[in-house]
Length: 328
Image 1 (cartoon, rainbow, N blue to C red):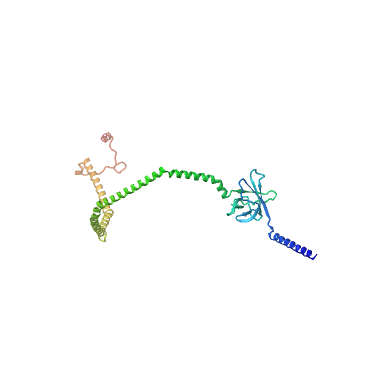
Image 2: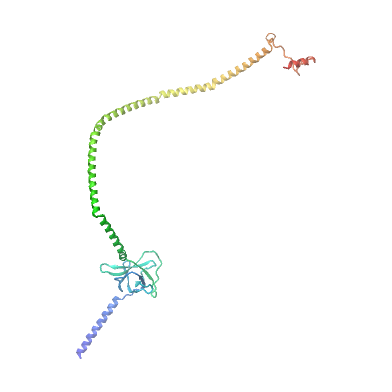
């Protein structure tokens, strides 16, 4: 009986220890984070993605993949349901890509947002909102791989054509022609050197004499310029030719002013007196022509005119004669 009692006690202790360990495991592994459900739908393959795969937002673990199945809303697409921490700031411009971890090939969902919208994505666990699942760089490379391979094949064919036997011969001929042209250029350079030595060397030797002549001519020009400067200095110096000419011009101006202010008015008065004398002489000559006897008897008294004392009317018999005499 005692052995059974010990066995039962030992069994109970083991069971209690196991229950305690399970409780500790549950306690330490419990997750109180509030998560929101979102869905992804894609027509591309999701190879390597498994349920419970990690969901990261810009490299930070924020959730897990909860379901992978076919999309009931879009025939042929794959639906991926994920649970994400409610603190993640998802907006209407957020998107997801399928990424892979190092060399293991395990896939995970990477969330990102380019900031195109600031409107928050409202979660709804009954009808989860959907995020676009864009192709990863590896998927884009796989899609373009065939086109890249075709282009590489085309480049290879063109390279083979370019490096064919015929073109290689042409390249060899071109290199030979280039070598001949280089040799010809060397010969031409040597000839030019000889020409320069035979033709230009005498001219270069004659350059010192020409330079000496140029220096002599420059010295003569400098001497003439110095003489001209000396002459100009003498002309411009005090009491020089220019000062004398200016003094003479000033004296001439003063003489002209004196003539205009003193002599010319006198000449004008003399001319006026002469003109009056000439007029008087003319009247005297006219009077002598009209009455020559006045030189002997004088002009006589002047007859009284009408209204003057001593005026008397001429007789009637004399009027016709006077009128006839007055007519021309």
